[in-house]
Image 1 (cartoon, rainbow, N blue to C red):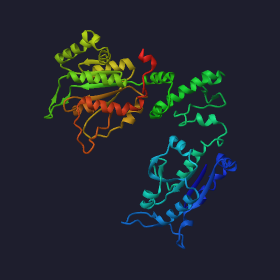
Image 2 (image 1 turned 90 degrees about the vertical axis):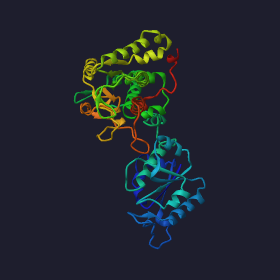
Image 3 (image 1 turned 90 degrees about the horizontal axis):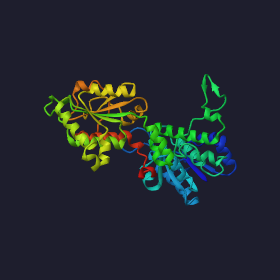
Image 4 (image 1 turned 135 degrees about the vertical axis):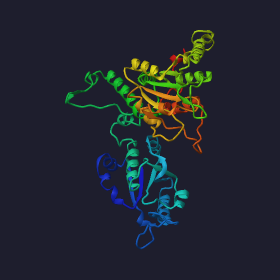
Length: 438
């Protein structure tokens, strides 16, 4: 593997290439690193490689001539060289990209600085653009080192044990399990007994479980990128059962179109759609808050039809979903029931189409689910009444219109979108388990 790095600071790479596995790989000829100084390709006697941007503005821009000359120089000697410009506009670097690049023979890493490079070079002479993350650094040199190390590790022989590479985080697509070493007890904290047992089968099982747990809690999106065995999915299901998400469909107090406080009527379609939504996304229970006795009786009659009557035999799946519903006269009753079930009061999270409140993101709410039970409140009619919203601990980020602030969605649509945003990374079952099909 041959790396070529084009930079205005060649000395930046002197120390990193003289230590650790990079040095050993270079000494053994497993990789080659060619550092080129962009200033060597300038035809100006002062070796100028940048200039002020047309149209004015801050900073300087790399001129096209030195870059083109350097690219031509390398292309003539390495016709198959893969040219990469390191910039914030590039695709995000990850393990999959590292694996892709490791299959190339020659890589050119162009280290940008200042405001970047002339657009004509970027658009017409660069094959690839890569970013190492959504943050700002002084230049592309640090990004070049990241790519150099990540790709080099994948070259056979660079890392002594092949298993070390295969079992690392992001190679296995899972975060690494916790590691311990001697002493077995430190300041009263003990190493898990299974690691001291000498039973390698149990240890591997423990490590796999811990790896799945960490990935699920911290980087759940990675789980959809790896091959999971049926036993892995059962472990994930077990962990997800520990999350306690409740939905509240509130019919009072809510506003009508005129801004008056009312108790809205229960809609048949809301009960059906929210129950199916809750069953699909693993919601623990759905409370329908309705103070009007006749409305509660009507809703309970409908629910009973599907749980006990002809509907149960006609559509067992609908019956299963509707078991999540419970109609209660007040939120206090629902909260008391949850507190009795969970042993603690749930966090109240309000939803509101108005963007006037400070809100938390779906990702932040997802993290809270590992800590406490959560009740996610949805208002009917024209939304939850203001004093009711003041009781909430948090507010969830509104659903924004794609082109403006219009977001007048039905409660069913809003709930579906928000639950998908909160829980989507956990939808891991791309095909049913064999046991589910029996």
